[in-house]
Length: 188
Length: 188
Image (tube, rainbow over all chains, first blue to last red; front, side, top):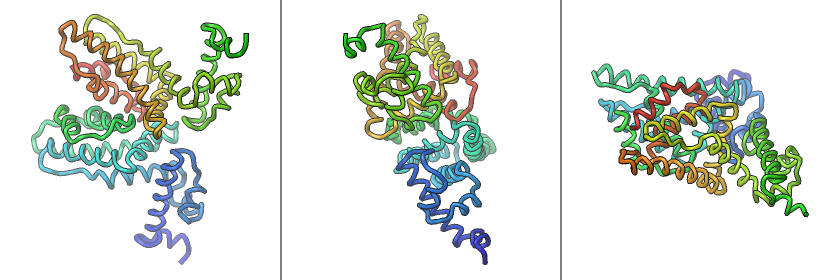
């Protein structure tokens, strides 16, 4: 079995490499900030060859997007509580917990950096945004199918996510449950 | 007249040095991003001695805050139209124009970087936020003195500024007049 075949085997070396590379990226962003390290440094920290990273992710930009998406998705699955108010309150509380947690600021700053970092960044930012919007849309569509009135995904971005993101970016934490519920109630 | 006296003379060399140093910072942020240059590099670009910058600003952090505050203040003076709706619409339109202009993204990213960049950054971020909140408060107090109902400054941050900042950071521009007016009307 050659290197390429091993890298593709699910759950084995491939999963371990993925986890180690993600961990290396998270550490390097915490230590140096976004944009201040190379693929070679990620590879060295993860104990893999540069070529392994290039083969799997293609570029540092794609790798960074993958890390941000994985963290945002893993930590904020979309709730399904039976009512839009319940879904949005649970969703907003999940996001609040995630972005005020140990790596939360890093994830928000990474999403922001990827979203506004020139042409390549715009592509990565588009991917992030498209994925986030798609998840939200499923939740909002489900509410409409139940006959509930639902805002659009932009309303959720502008009046639930944006205030929380900006308060985290500006260091105005914690986000209390009352504050987070208040954002949802205000939107609905 | 020694160097120190010249630097303090208002309107003359001092003002020129200030403008040149601010311009150098703006250029370096555009080219390299926040945090990727030194006081020495700012000084070389502005054609002044390192000691001139340290004497006047004390640190790179303070200089960056000064640049961000100057730009935010110069480009967004607080309007006084006679009604809160008019004031907030004009204010929001000014902010929208400023943050979607040529250096707008840089100013927003600088404000964000200063606000969440560890202990020193928190101090600088506090200064930025305190100044912005003070300006807003004057406008809101004026409305209350006229007998109008006014939201608090946090409401303006959460539901007018935060959506616009996040849309700029995520590259979701332009901010149309309808969109900006809609944010104000929704808050009031």
